[in-house]
Amino acid sequence: MKILMLNYEYPPIGGGGGVISKNIAEGLAQLGHQVEVLTTWFKNTSEISTPHQNLKLIRLKAKRAHDFKSNPVEMLDWVVKTKKFCATYLVENKFDLCFANFVLPGGEVAVYLKQKFNLPFVVISHGHDIPWVHGKRLWPLYLLGYTKIKAVLKYADKVFLQTPQMLDNLKQFDKKFVNKVAIVPNGFSNNCIVQKEKSKTFQVIFVGRVVKQKDPATLIHGFINFIESGGAGELKILGDGPMKSQIEKILRHLGFDKNVVLFGKKSQQEVMNFLTKSSVFVCTSLNEGMSIAMLEAAASGIPIISTPVSGTSQLLNTDNSLIIDFKNPKQLTEALHKVYKAWQIEAEFPSNNSIQQIRENFNWQKISKLYENHLMEVVK
Image (cartoon, rainbow, N blue to C red; front, side):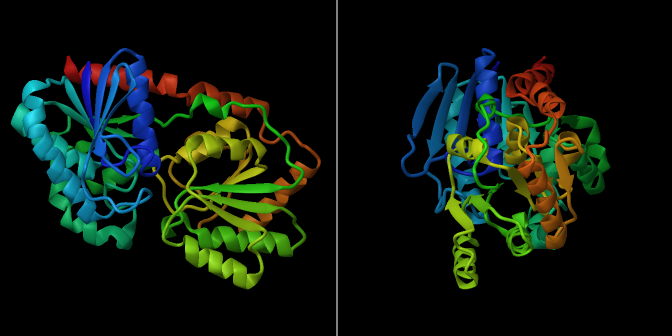
């Protein structure tokens, strides 16, 4: 197949959605399909590159102020620039299929291409682009984009979701699109499977954007309580975001800036290096699609403490994790103490069996084949 992939953010810019689309694009290219990705240019990136003989990246110069976040105005600018580019590019370059990331903005471009060039398309939701996941915080955007979201789901040949929880959300939004859904989970990169190094100190790691959705307040509050109630260790936060500088000021004021360190955004390889020395991975998110960071932590073999966000039912069980309620720093503190005790006596947690199951079921080679099978059904 010759596949046109759309995503307004693609590494090194963006978050989990970009990482997912990168792995899908690379996986399909390695299976022998020709993949071209239309995304956004950012400083220090090339406008055109070919990271693989079957993979071509085209970065369009649309508005983008930050590498770690984007706003509706920037997304709309990318839509306009991408439609304009495709109006001429697809006249001479034929594709079998369009693979759109995010119902909006990627899906809007895909609908335009289907109407103009009769190009079939699939769309993948990354968790927050189908109402009403984020509730009141995103309601204004959901209401503004309501008819466009409906149109994307209507014209899509297939809708990819990662978890059963995401399917439940779609059912609440509109049941008539359920027959188009294929649930395909995310995967982990092979560089997660490395030899673990036990650190001399108990190291807690958090990976993700420093935004309200990730609830860093509960994370830091729970960890500080852990220290003040007899625990010892460090909290390392890998990620950037609008709350980062504010949190650093609060930590300095409280005198915990040596125990809690915000490292900013790190590359995937740098994250892997941190994971090899980490004692526990913590996710305090209020909502997720299916967290790549959590999946990679599970595949690397470290225990996980998480809220019951989408994806946990597939990844987590009593052999590899502890589940805490949303916005509950007290439960986080208690969970940290449990893992801390297991770490001190070098107990087998997570179990080798649970680690092996994650590695067998969620590797990108297997996931890429699932996508390939679904895409072949669309182009038949």
